[in-house]
Image (cartoon, rainbow, N blue to C red; front, side, top):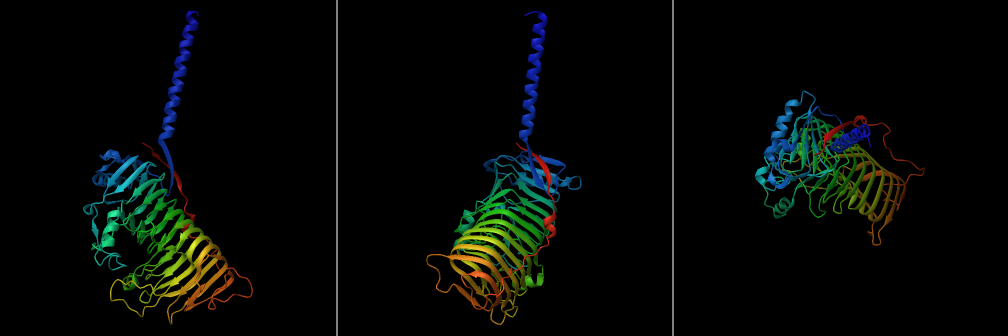
Length: 469
């Protein structure tokens, strides 16, 4: 080989190695770029480790989370900021969020809740409840908390928030708590909230609790709790407006979703309804409770709830209405369609004597109005009792409509298949034959389901990016 050829060969090798190196850098860059969908993207970004956090599952990182949120809050008026939680196990106590902010969890990131009570600040009771749900006193702050916020995203590519709730469950069972157990996520008095693509597990009590808020999107959430532990509700929208919950998978020891709006005289006085809610493509497993419960705390009113394309397996009931004398207000304009149910105690369950009052000061004459409740297109198998519908004496539940429901019974069903008192309504194409208080219509009908869309359903998500560690 002559000198010229040798030189050309070396140049070719250098060029080749340069291209390989460039390709390697570009590939590494692609691997580090994680995209996600959100209501807003952020101009600024930081890693949790920038604030001294250690992801070994043992080091307490409460100060790091608080320092990160405090630092990033300064960018609220300059395009907002995102805090990226990288792979690791990040032990922390309660911390607060800020506006125009994204909390993003890497797929291998786990936020672990501290089991030390000192890491959970005390809060006063919610004004629409008057006292805590577990005890007359106040309540512990949630693990992730925010109030009076605008434009907040809690998301990831299926990272995990683990409440490590076992010690709390034990204290509750022994009756030694004087205040209400904490939740994993609570957002209050806020607007434009997104919670998506995360796994929540083992909460001390409820998992996700948006309250007194509006324009809420909850998507792609997995919630896993032991089915034998009470009050581990999945998602509890409470006195909110314009809420969308979709594509969620929930295993719970209580209601998979519980729709609420305040408790007795406190809820009546506060007067903030839960309204304009859509729930779709939900899968629920809850052997001791409901797929979707309406109440029992409904004293601010519940209206315009739309539930569709639901699957429930080994669950006590599908859509359950829970109320009582003293609750006041209303549950009305409820629309349900396309449910597939397997192994259920009840398909239709309404309870007008749920009880459980915050104090002796409630007014037993404050009777709730339950009306315009619509179900259609339901297939249920292995059912113990198709319907347990109990209204309130001199205050019947009215306007119940059930159409196109095919229910197959378990091998040992209840002797009385439909048990109905103080209810009024109609049915069409329902088997087994409903009770006399819900007579079959001579001409087939479809129970109502709105054709319009809620405003929250028109919210478009952007494609944003986060650097993956």
